[in-house]
Image (cartoon, rainbow, N blue to C red; front, side, top):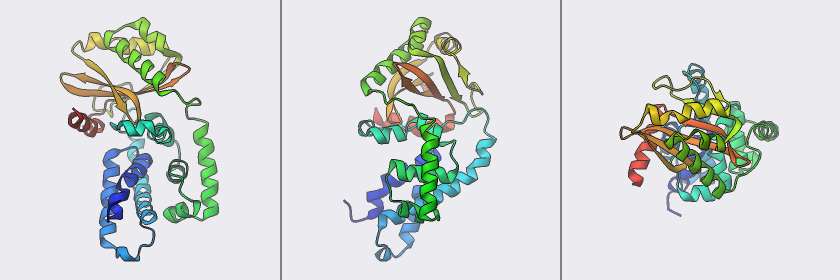
Length: 289
């Protein structure tokens, strides 16, 4: 523990903000705002620094989420969260890894801002209801109702079976090798019949503007990478707490890929291509090498 509670809880604040916003850049802004407010207050009067800091981060995230709502409505094509290059310790924490997965963050997008805040604080970080009530400005009874509603909503949409990490890594690597080699049969072998591919280009780069469904259609699209971009390099690597991949074209990060696996096959593929969302990931990869 350091002498500064803000330093001790900085990682927590970032994760709360990231899970609420799906954007690492916005989460960093929230952490910076929390620091400014923490620096300006008489810290000796704060009996529970963690609760105070989480409350600031939550309120600022709620404000940012509401202001982003219209922008996301006008977003070109499908919106996906900004990917994170996570460390092995995140993958080892199964609950945390699931909560920051691209699949889970995509589900959280279907909640209202308040439901999302309550779900993250309660289900991910196990904060007491009264502490959450203070953070979002609601009664404890109201928070309990919101938590119940949000939990049911997420449960109905999240992957039903938790996948063994070794199996997840193996299937992901088989998938990436098939994409790299343009091997249609190998692709079809790892894709569920009703697999869904969601791509996010943000209107900046080419990407399917609607989800592509069905193993045949998805394999046809991905199997053509070797022809369209013969110099493309497909690498395996951690993405948001789970095995994922990245596509390098012309020496530049082109796409970050995350997958959801059930029953030994891939049911969902998330391809983040919007260059603005890849800046931090690319910087982290460069530092990691």
